[in-house]
Image (cartoon, rainbow, N blue to C red; front, side, top):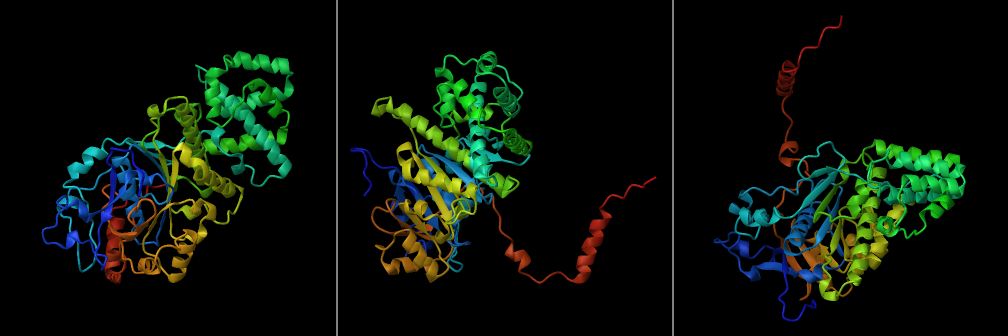
Length: 510
């Protein structure tokens, strides 16, 4: 059982409906069933404190895992004070700020023939929408639309791992690149204190790096003191810690770094920086740094498909994880200075859908290795800082074993074969689960699942997923459209002719 504070009743997350032996939701087999009229015993609920663990959701495509993930995120945000950061590879959460229409509640029903149904548990849309509207949401995207909750994804260049730039460089040049990046981090922290905006971090850092290599130490110190207020240190030391640095003598550290950087590496480094700046995802001033030090929204969605390519997506995830890690460590250090009863920290859940793409068993390059190490650090040490991961994947054998082994809460939905079931059992450490219980996962239809671990304190729990109430952004092909005979050739010609009639005439060329 989950340990609770004496005298306090636990808060519960409603994840699904109790099922009969045929895996049908029992309550919804009644003629009188309607949303909101059920008893507590009809629901599958998990204690909120038990969600404070790393979680793995394993299921094949088409099993309803994205639907279940949406439900889990909704309940975490409604029933607890926690935050969620979603790394969204399929745009499933791009419309998470929108609530489904009233029909989801008013017409809720279970089709016993098709064995499906979207089944919420509140009495009405208003009951959910009233609470959901209070959740601050930010959807970070690389697309042009920045209205409503959509914001341009702006990454802090100093927070990025140098491994994402040094992939093709020789070891000696990689060392130079590390020193170059360290120099820029120091300049970024100093620049963040300026009251007036300068020429932008990249330009300013390149200018100062070249000066550091040309001037004497005394002359360079004069430039820094003229351009930046370097005393007292205390006021900007907190900015340095946002990058995981603990530098107390910025001028000396900057000069040391600059001494090890050649002209060729300088040109390479700042050339790459400007490439990402031109892509529009790098902050041109200290906004990204300031955001790392200010309260974040309770729900942040990173719309990965809106970024141009895989390398940019990996870069973005790296920067975001760095920001979350440093924010959590900073909060932890501040909490230790206060009495225990004044510790008001809340957990942050980092949700990773299609996790095998970001945490692969065999990283293909240095960038993937760096990202895997970040996740390993989070699962190994994140608990004390209040950082937890929720991994979602079709194939556990494609995931990093160390990261997966730290997931105590497990949800298994439909699996495609006995071999996948065997791998899942081995990698999730499910040897104590009765084989007949696990084998049921091979028979699961859409929406069915099995909860294992601390969030199922009374033992393994089968369930039918309760409805996700926010709009799912991703979209599959319409089978009622494509799985049908094509139109006749004449009808196709008629449609083409009609379309051409609507086209504007081509302008004449003189």
